[in-house]
Length: 56
Image (tube, rainbow, N blue to C red; front, side):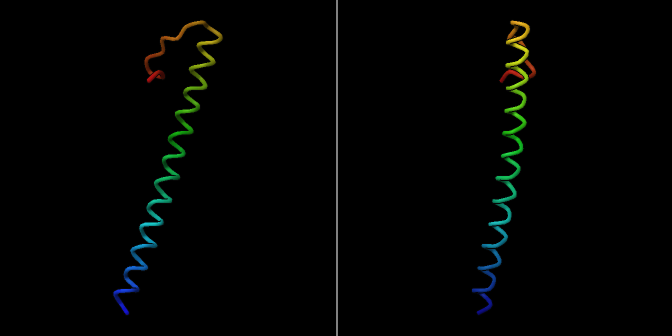
């Protein structure tokens, strides 16, 4: 009985960790997308595409 309960708790913890990480990854992806957007704006307005800090 206790083993089953522990298994459920582990599953809950894992679920929480996974959802936390996917949340974090989405935030990172959004930041990368914003940087790409800024890079595109700079490239389009200036005609320059050599921004080594933003380009990857």
